[in-house]
Length: 350
Image (tube, rainbow, N blue to C red; front, side, top):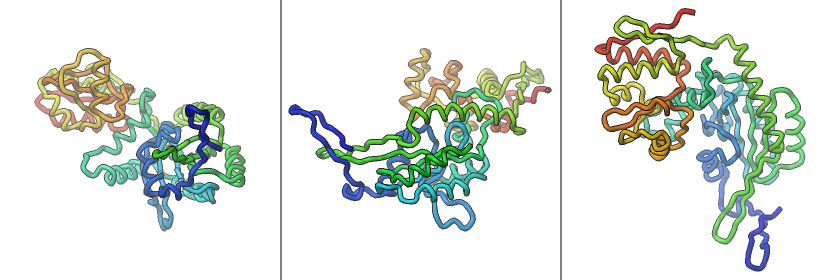
């Protein structure tokens, strides 16, 4: 295995280096870099814990614990060695330990993780988790954490025993173990990483993702916890037509603004995670998306009411779409915070 550099005289091969020879450590370097940019591993994940070991009598800790868009926890184990060691067995033990985690457990884990990573910032772990799980899917039942746990192994290489075991385990229903090879190279003064998923092959992985999405739809349909409640916003005692969760919150904010409540006051109730702004009253949608993308890291237009922006007080405001189980507490908080607006709400019958 080699990486080839195109030069004036032809192809110059560069052999893989060893992390140890480059002075790169497993936790201080590899784990830190992947934690801060997990998409490098080819996954759309939200990290909810690092060195995670929140279970009884825990003597070992998960390098990184994440959740995917489908609501599955993902145990991520890292090794800088070239055979993977026994990381598959270790990861299986960890997966068994976290399989019973509920949605509230994940919220708690994420809150602890964010408090360590961003101690100066005021964060709403529940809102961030809900927004990630519901991102752009338009589902009204609210997010869930499934009891199937995925495993992602990253190492400089994997021995035949490990890959054989992973391929065999993946044959069983509910098992999803992936091996991602992370190989360092030194090119002159630069250190490069070659990152490739080797088990299963990416094409097979895409097929498995489609199957999991279908299974999630079936599981949501079977769930007894689905909540399709619609809400009336009540203005001066008159109930407006019922709306689904996201539009009920949007309607409440719209009515508050029309009744003279300042957008900045509403933002104090909802927090920047759910109601944020940029300077200037931006009219053009694409310019608006660009402005928010520049102002906020990882801004995803699918999660926000881009087509229903509020332009107040010399600023442009956007409201988040995903609310889930936060809908009713949010409506109640807004109604209680501004009693002079004479707004309330009620669940729609049926």
